[in-house]
Length: 352
Ligand SMILES: [Zn+2]
Ligand SMILES: [Zn+2]
Image (cartoon, rainbow, N blue to C red):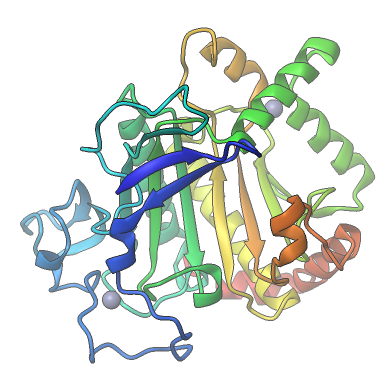
């Protein structure tokens, strides 16, 4: 069974995907660093035949698809949350609403090496990975049934990573998630009353006030969001207004790679190397009157979110959707800034 179901009381949507229950999941956390062997890692070089055939790869000119010789490899997720072949009629008008679990779920295998954390990647390597994000979003948005592409990366078992091998997930959704819809609506409302982009206005305000600024780069600015959900949360925005990440130039991606590494360094230093989720927020697929491209271009502003697992969501979060953040974002920002004070230290950790 693969279905998207709407909760009739609260209105939220849930992906019900039974296929995922057979994926290699463990109920206990594995040791922090798990040696290869014992079980076959499907993402390691040499094991290409254990994944579905690749849809895209950065590989040496002499190498063959689905064979060794790659540096980044994108494959359909074998244990997909949503399926490209899901079909059937939506169940409507009977109190309970559900749609077939159509969607595209891919994995970007970031490196042939099993043991690497994101902070160990060089700037060039990370820029290549970002170029893969760009390419997959462009490609998935070509499918008219895909309304939002969510790119996310889970690092650490407690952040939901079921495989240690470094990878990013790409999920093409047949609906625009409530969170994104809310961002679109709020940006549009601001534009109507105040003119201009809400995010641009916030960046300007934060830069003037400085209290929550983690760092100010040439093209990007990192903030501890005013309503950070957890201690150490960072949002990284392009300073120049742009609604789609997937329209970034190679130059911008190279700069972005350096700034993501800077965020990582700050987070690891200030919050003791926490497990984390990296989330990319970009504009939904342009669509007639619901999401006119012209309006998205004026009002939406893409960004990255680093959400470290510094607290454990529990009953309050599940019951109310309210996060309880025990550290003021202003003090988080101060700690993150201090972690970057010794420029030589973080610059020294970044390989070209
Ligand atoms: Zn591996
Ligand atoms: Zn903007």
